[in-house]
Image 1 (cartoon, rainbow, N blue to C red):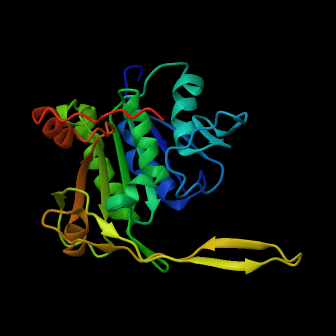
Image 2 (cartoon, one colour):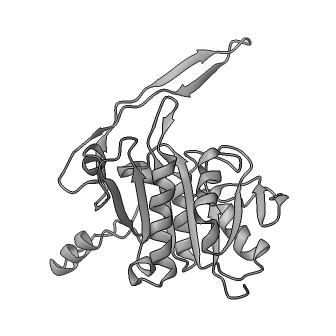
Image 3 (cartoon, helix red, strand yellow):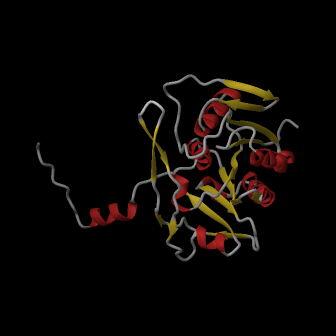
Length: 257
């Protein structure tokens, strides 16, 4: 078929991650599937782009590539390199090995890949599965991504207005629930070590976020067995505060040093 849609897949767990493979299988019949994903685990890399190092693309098979770059690099290079400037009809990033709830979305390479697509006016979905030891729910995550992909390819307006973030609990009891991002406070640590030459080095220790558990949040929905579905925007201006300051004719005085 020459008029079939093109769906671009990526992730931050790397080209050979199980979640990406299952996602590809789930949407394979929806159109031409192109995969461009990092050649290594890029979890927590956020929206990094590589402007000081060359990028090398390795063809794994037809329409499937591994890149020595970030998830955002993958989207950019896929569009302007692999697809020769032709925009895909949809980008799906995932299935992430672990949740991307609340403010974790700011750190997520999976979400950043979807953001990069949206910046280029391409409908985009980020999908993640809860993980507990060796358990996951990639099957339901793939099904959720497919359902939204069908809607996006049908031209639903809401895919032109936001990136859609999906998180799937291991023990899903219900379907989708529209949510907002939760907020949280951190309990984290830095672990200091000494190397064999006597120099200090550090690991970022485990962190235990405490979510606010507000009504209609992604965390609360997930805890209740729903699949939280959250529209995310790229534009970061605090418009409510800005409007308040404008209305109050607030001025920030400049002080010469």
